[in-house]
Image 1 (cartoon, rainbow, N blue to C red):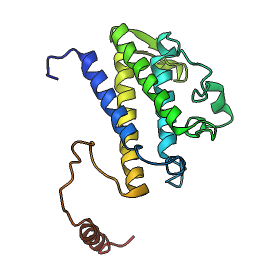
Image 2: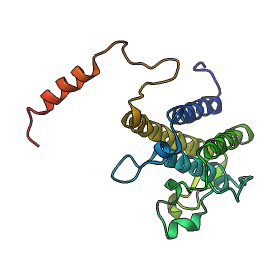
Image 3: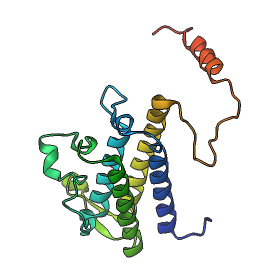
Image 4: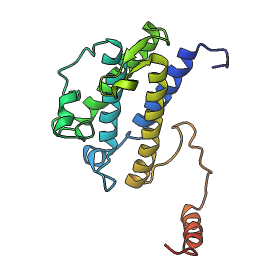
Length: 199
């Protein structure tokens, strides 16, 4: 990729990287570990994928008059579901296997990327759940908005996975972590510094 690449290609590449990071961090864990809430607000690894899938369907679908081809799939959360459960797209149903949700998210990625193939970046759309005064927007803005959201959630999943089993790193082929580093000593050093300050 170079500075001269078409903007849609650049946006697509960063969207793909966010999805890859998200999915990689779930690799190798069982159903319970994937679903287990890891924060006081209930954030789970698999729930984050469900949320991201619905974000991409909504923003790259109805916003631009595009229909998601699997509307009855159990991972698709209808807008009216949020009226009774504001966390609907973070709650993975027990009867939806993790492997199926991950395969579903890969199809969602292809659907989102196709919008960048089919439509110019200045295509105007309307986000039905945004306030009316800013609901009208462009594909370019939506791509940046979604890319930012996905990377934020990929970062959350980095931390959740480390809390789950200690797995850490940037990518499978390049962890970006120093080899042989004494992590317990490092954590102890940081804790000693923090302990010098009052709460």
